Figure (cartoon, rainbow, N blue to C red):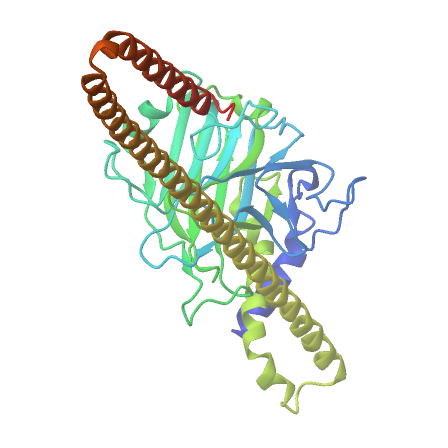
Length: 410
């Protein structure tokens, strides 16, 4: 491991003069730029939006929550025919069996991000999309690849892209955060993209160990100068399932020869080598300058780990608050429904009793009147008429009373 670190660092130093890093198209932690509103941003040449949140040591495109879209987009066109880049990212979450959706790296002629259902981007774009998809959707006729290359001439819809036979490769690019192997300092993955005219080469370093594996290599059915007007963008999306989709860095280079990207590998070697720092500190061969370098790296690792834990705590708190609010709404709706049922029941009981009492009263009055009339003999007809008038008046008053109650005037 020591030999690898030394060789990588020497190679990075030698190649630094030969390779041109495209700073306007690159970014890496720590992210220290603050805009005029006090919000942390990527840098002056990259914009972000949607659910994206920029932290000091990483960019979170989506939290581990459903139905989120986030993006970072480069506002400077490439204006070249050769290009290479290394994307370092981390996909992780609490779900052990169910999780999704993924990250998209876009090389298109869209100067600004346009939201859509194609992994957080629109479907009818011109250019190339490299999709990291962690959810296997059996409904797509084109099958599934963990890393898929989309090629669009500006006319293909999402349905067409999904049903096309997938080109790309499979790789284990997702981390379960409750696993004993998960560590935000060392858990990440990388993609290496090389474009030379219409030739595209894609490689994957699944665990950021500088062990690259070929994913795809071939010619693109696009014009030879298609890269001239390309803008770069990165999106993250979740649907019914979710994950944290984090971007750690995006390093762009002018040369299509991937040997120049050994500089990025040297950072990975050094980061992984820091796992052994505790033992090196005890070595007699590590002088004060050696110890200072190691302690600085250890402090940096602690900051990365602490920030990730704080963000995770904030996210869990937000989730719990949302659950409490949803539960509160459910309880309120149940209480309102119960009140409506009780009110309807009480009204029905009261009306039933009033109707029953009125009927009993009518029968009693009718019986008494009939008896009086029969006993009165000659007064039968006049008395019957008067009694009927009184009875009719009573019913009229009762009916009016019920109407007023229904109209809430009483």
